[in-house]
Length: 309
Image 1 (tube, rainbow, N blue to C red):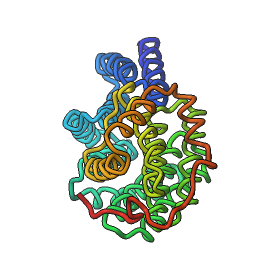
Image 2 (tube, helix red, strand yellow):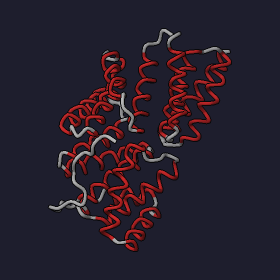
Image 3 (cartoon, rainbow, N blue to C red):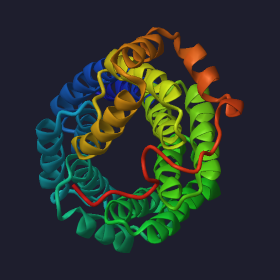
């Protein structure tokens, strides 16, 4: 039985490593295999951890109903277990599902987690909850408060030396900083995220950073650069099977429409196709070229946070 349990834990670890590199179908397959073993062995805590991980994978892939079902199942099981951390993580991902979909009510989940996970052992969870609160503040147009909360969450990760989630949080902070009007700092944050994500092999966060830099290029009246960055990000999302969040869709579509109107159909399609055709390393190198960026007085997209969808 012990050997089977060790094998199942190995499967779960391999699944986590696959997810960290945005190989989500493989991650889900390994996690499902681990879950079956844990269930057969009656290892309820391990079953709970695996349900949470499967919920995370489903969230990343845009399968929000599946993600919610996995996490709700985890919460039901957690009520029978003495492990304090597991239900907090389940609530965290439920909050981020709501963020992705633009639903109300997630703020209470994050606030509860900050209050419940205050000890050092749960510092990464606190960082995620602060990120959630900062993300919501951004969507309400409270950009100064968003920057404070997002910076606080990022600082916690830096204090504990946790790099895996850092790129996600850099992307969120860059978005809020741009909304404050500090586009040079926003560009630096997105480029930092891009380098970190490349080093970790995290293609999902690379796509996020490319989209952030694309929006910044649009705001700086560089529509051709914006179009090919968006094209590169779209191709990468398709390759890993991770869609744009519904809550970001209206903002994204508005910026892309403005870029297309400025370029014209032929030039826009050519730039977008050029971005899609770029090898990933070439896209990253081009996106990091700060010499291609410049501030122009009249932006194509105003650098202010939209209202919550």
